[in-house]
Length: 278
Image (cartoon, rainbow, N blue to C red; front, side, top):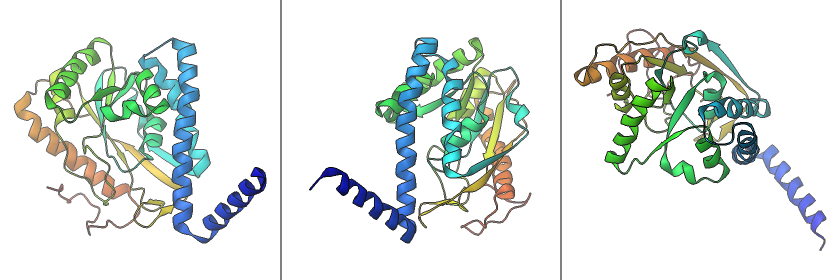
């Protein structure tokens, strides 16, 4: 049997499944997203090498341009509020909530100049994706070796002040789609206190109305992005970190519940009186 008729039949079957099954549509869109990540990473890596010749934070503007195009494939919109708070020409630690694989699109939508991310070391070995992250100046940490991770963070604290860098961190430490925020890990806050730079919280509304792994839902939708006022750390010490974490968590959680359209799965309601999850 010839190859082309088989491919055509397989494509028609796939299209039929997508029309008939929400799960098939979900997995097809996730597969497309992964394919876009790999393909765009390969192309963007070539552009970065031709433009800047190697690893530099300046490559992030190129990466951002490619990733922002993803939203047109999925019918996503981002409504950003108070983005000017990210644009100030000073080093800072940016913290945001972490929900799904789509977070990368949200990050690149508001990414300020001279901003790098911290990522787990395993991502470095994801072929072109790892390469483009390396070229963009991403700092990789080994979560299994705390001493190595602390060394990287200490070095980063010095570099962000010396090179006027902004550092983007997900303090929850892992993806979380339970309709609330997880407790924050303290690494981002120790980094800010060590470098004596402000913390700028960024909150993304819940994706669950259009992206839900449990319900196999992946449709178009709108994400509200709220940039909160910077939290100063000048004069603070390591002893102040727990209170700093609590202040930031409360502010971000209140904002998350307020700007998210769907009811929270754990029964929490929006409002200024909510308390952070313990």
